[in-house]
Length: 316
Image 1 (cartoon, rainbow, N blue to C red):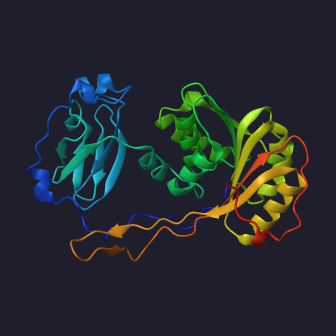
Image 2 (spheres, rainbow, N blue to C red):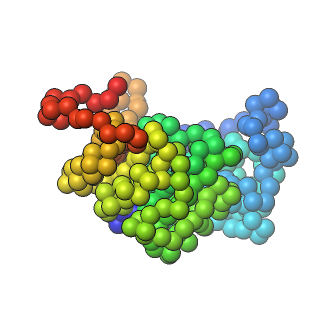
Image 3 (cartoon, helix red, strand yellow):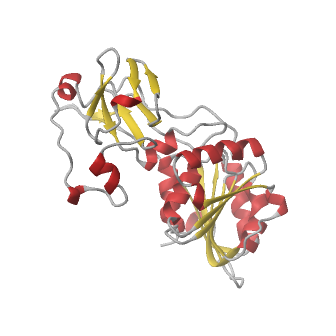
């Protein structure tokens, strides 16, 4: 878990791709059964019901994530939206606020849930989480340790990836952070896939032969020995750090502990303002959020080549 800093948010000045007039005149049809998403047959056939998650999207690109409740009301920048007015509707339909403002009723994605978790700490952003999943190969049925859970945004990502038969073991030394993370995971309906544990990394992990370890700590190198003991042979480790000094110390520790295929990357994300004949990047972008370091556990030591790191290409 890294201390919370200023987080990236979508610019409220972005030009809307859907005008209010377009929303007002949108024609909505009930989706065919063949188009229904697996696991959503009942919701899609009967319409939205109590407990369902909904993302409300307004013409000015503001979004609100809610779970439908009896008598629930959502206060927005454009009036109040009653949950009762959403019940029975289908994703893609329109609901109006008390002032007549239209909102599109959408199904939340994993990115929506990650960006809208309740936060006490900085989070791992979707752009970084996606690379972590690909680089570590997290998939259904795997056992994953996450140390430095913070607010649980990455926990949502990991739990979704290991479902339905895997498990995420979520460690943090701060009970108050774990409580917030637990609330966020429960709200996403993923609590059965996660075990929360209040424990300092210096005490080690309780699990053995896990597939992946993710370290999001101020001093991630302190967790490397525990990660090595917990990982199976060939198991993958990932960590995120905001500075070069942290990365250098982390890589040195990984080398000393016998890890291989060590590499560090940075992920940058830039949005485009698309307009006919004058498309350009937005002035703001999702720049530096952290350096991602990856490694794999070798069961026997391997001699390092004498070349300088600058002369060695990344693993391929």
